[in-house]
Image (cartoon, rainbow, N blue to C red; front, side, top):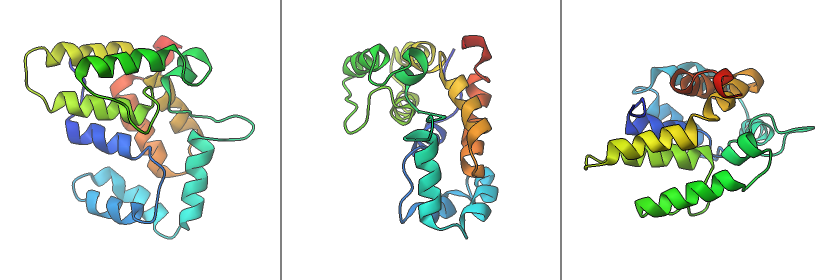
Length: 177
């Protein structure tokens, strides 16, 4: 079963997990005509100071207190720790593809979604099987739970929408958790 969605959508969803910066709002404005679901989040984010958006990103994904509600890493969901066996398996998968997860943990959801986009953009023999493997081994076991957590804990509409879009592809996570 191929990964649902197109390469641009996977890149967008992965990119929206990155820390917001000075140009993030302008980038969302450019993307909104092609992705109407961004209009509501844009209305909410436009008057919000960047540091509040950054604080929400940090709380959700990096260092929430007393617990980070949505760490976007397979190892965190599958093993309860960072840089575990899931990261090792993802690094090996990237090596098989001739890729490397430079600058981010290999099991980071943004990196996995970028890999999905890369695979979706290729039309060579075996790419469908590789998509199936990425979906089955590296995303399906935990991405639905992450999506449900993101929808439940996000205070900003942007992250709730990202969670909803991921849940539409991976379910609500109950089957795996």
